[in-house]
Length: 463
Image 1 (cartoon, rainbow, N blue to C red):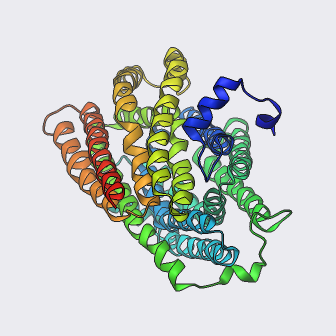
Image 2 (image 1 turned 90 degrees about the vertical axis):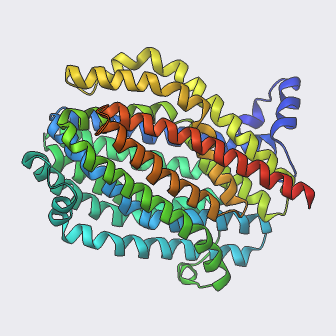
Image 3 (image 1 turned 45 degrees about the vertical axis):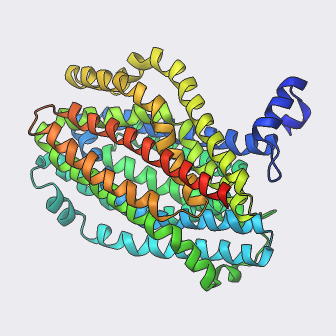
């Protein structure tokens, strides 16, 4: 509505039409997809940063415990989020085909499959958190381990609830309902922030407070998501019993995306766990510094981090409508917009870096390490990260599901883990070695995915 009432100057309107409009989207529709997604990503990242800040006030032991559990919760989440990501692609493609009955079945199957897998994968981590942590991190300090056990068990409870939210969020994203996604994100993240302030700053409940805040916020988020899909003015009118539909072709298309992507995410999470394992000898200070770096780097690229999901919605609909020329065009545009968003964020972020670092109450050693590595990361973020993050989703949305996952997995184990270990431990570079491996991975992903995209573009033009 705002875009319609406040029309841009004629030259700007003409340029936006040339750059973003097509038979599937007007430029206003593209902007209406991007803008809420950017706000959504910003809200998630900033609130996550604030939660880390709140936890850090309890000392580096609490931050280190969260750092150990983070890759494990990432593993749990990716075991079912692969299904939801496949559902996003299939829903977007069905939306492009314009068949409401097929669309209903795609929505229903995405919902029940995601929730079912989410509940099943959480059970082992809920029942045996201490055994899992001791197996993975036998050298961890006792104080860190005690807090990590509490945090992992609580996170497993919250993730079961979160599977409902994740499924519905994926459906809305596939339908292009970015505004509704933004509303859900605001609801769940504001609830998380308020509960965290209450339990961590007022009641001083430390890790237990963080877990309780997470569970309550995700309960509220799941309830809000349910109302978005089945309440007033649902995006796809359907009865609750229609959720439990089954269609072999939809299942096949969903798994075609979900299995390679799920395997990639699982291996990425396993890689993060392995990285945490070989970083433990570096000490609690290094673990805390790495958590701070990841948190603030996430803030830096959070606006651009919206573009991979936007890419799925836009490219998936064009592919479903059979518009190969528009698939190519929007794939390039999404990369360019991602790069501009990182540049704009950096202009705002870097002058504030000393203040942001101070919020985490780091030790002098953690502060110095984090500052140096964050500044050193910017050129790699600007030059290589955009293609390495948007292009895999462009390829998946356009039906190329195997290559992005296989290529990512090879890089993960050879560069992120293999090279990271060699540089961090035998070469003695410590945390710097881990981040040199990450920068190298972004570079190789950029080259590999960019080359794959251009090859497929040439093939489609030849046909």
